[in-house]
Length: 422
Image 1 (cartoon, rainbow, N blue to C red):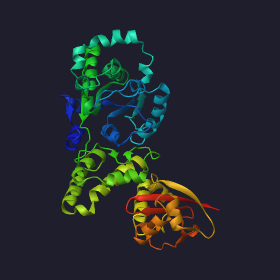
Image 2 (image 1 turned 45 degrees about the horizontal axis):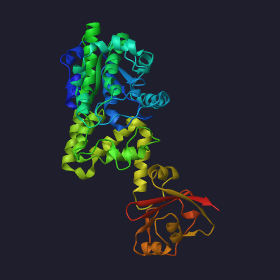
Image 3 (image 1 turned 120 degrees about the horizontal axis):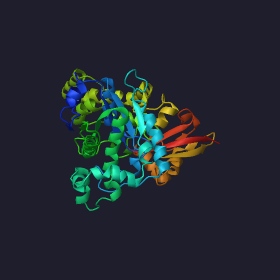
Image 4 (image 1 turned 60 degrees about the horizontal axis):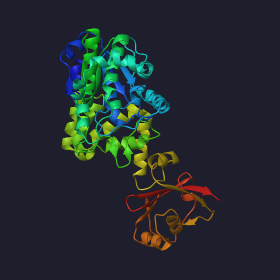
């Protein structure tokens, strides 16, 4: 199957230029996608464009990941209702370092014949003097042309409007395409559907300046069937950085995918074949309670981002921590799963501490009498085991690995006690 046909069956083509299929079939093509360094880590919303580049390379073409060290200082108005906060050069450079390391997990920079590249457009944009840029590039675009682009039109029609700074973003991106065309023979730019205006501006500039034909392809923006923005949860953004989102919570994010979305996400975010995905879709239809499609999705994407070892850890931790007790759990597993839970360090004497005192100390109960009432009603759990004895004392022996005690009130209110030995 040719690359464009694969993109099509995976529902990855929102729009594209005419003749792209023939261009890809004619021989190895160099294509690029830009990534904004607005944070030191990419998030799950970035996975779709990253995997577009990975699929491009696996098909024998050459991918370029362009990190916007220059454009990132301006801010892309596409898909935004308000102007972004401008970053300092130091913030941009710091973010670039984290993003480069993440992209390296997906692209092969040592591939024979078509090694991937990571470039920074700051290398050519920051030194470019304003007057020279306006003369060389700005004169090729009319204001009418720029205002007709959807990303600009929406901002102009909105309450906030658009600053000249963000209005100029399109010119910078168009120039990026010209530079990559000149230096690396790049003739394809890809991205999300909100980037179509920027991509076609670059194609037009290549035609005007070089008399050559370039191509563009945009994928649909990912949404959930429930109407929630993809990658956003109650706990916040799902990051690719394990220090921001633990591999366990990353795995759980994919595991909890809605049945209505899982088939689409398997196409978008995995390298499973058409037949494999179709088989999982049939299983979801006949036995949705088994959640085999979600499990496969979680395993596949977590392995891509964090490696097979972290998949095994996430599944092992889930099996232990969602069981009846935590007697077999390790300190590392507990800390990974409950990384976002509030915690308190408490010094335990040799004879321990009354459970009612501990519940009041960590504010799971308003007072000792409230703690006693909770215990009598069966609403308190210690290390996932229901506790009902209001006279119970907790000692170091009750702590997981001698270090942690997990307290829970009801179904959701959890608190991690870090044991200090007095």
